[in-house]
Image (tube, rainbow, N blue to C red; front, side, top):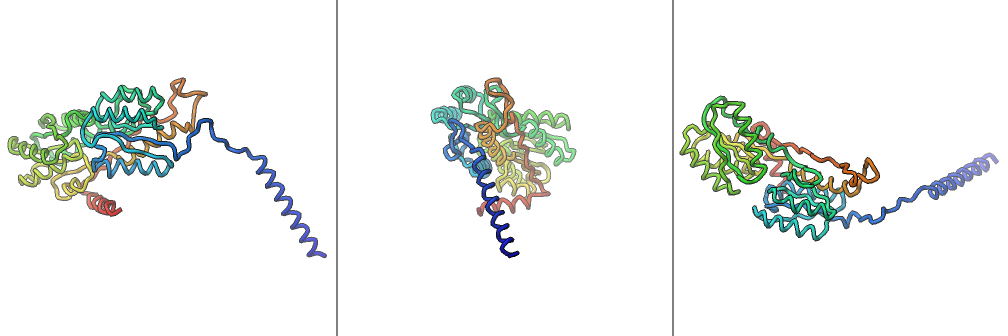
Length: 344
């Protein structure tokens, strides 16, 4: 009898729990799709830049884009010319506007991008700038680096490497690229503060060609006997600078540094021709550029009934992604990581 009473109690408990679960399920609100909502799979975003397949971009920016696409479940396309072609890049941006993607992340290689950026915004396509900003445009945000501060850091590195020596320093980079102009401004300001006696020559145009950079550096070494440093403001310049220092036997009497995280840059640091190489955190900048555009469309937070109408930003307007510095203290680790990355 006792066992039967226990059995009846257990059965009654199961029935009650079942009824409660059914009641909760029936009473729970069903999440409905927002009117006009687009599934993640159908959301397409675009990253647009000159040198769209540049190895530095492929190994860094592209990986950030792919990571964002996987995490968010959306499509991210890479668009733009294979070289430094501003008219072609603007034409590509105009063509993307006609395709009406959910957002565009564009690298602002030239102020003339402003018209197309504003056109995209007027068409209801959110735009953020990446790596290089067009601050006068109507873009929603800038995700990238403080290039002026990077120029100052490069100056401090060369100053420390020269260890108090006086002489001449030179700058090499893409003369018309906005980021190179900002680096030059920061480099000059910092070097003037550190040692006004150091003469800083005007920027020589790399034309994005490492062989040309090597020849420019060699010519400078031959012309300026007191040359103590050469900085490269674009990613292909430091390897060319290192080659010239090696071939002219100037290791230990002059130093180079600059941007880039290719193996040639790391090897230049390891061999002692470059005091350092640094690079913007490019994987992060493209990753967050897509996430910002996605969040803008999803509007997870708001401050009014219509933030856009009232000019309220519900996304960050500037993200400084910082830089990674590679010098003698961590170059072996970075080379190891680069070799492992190449095997993936």
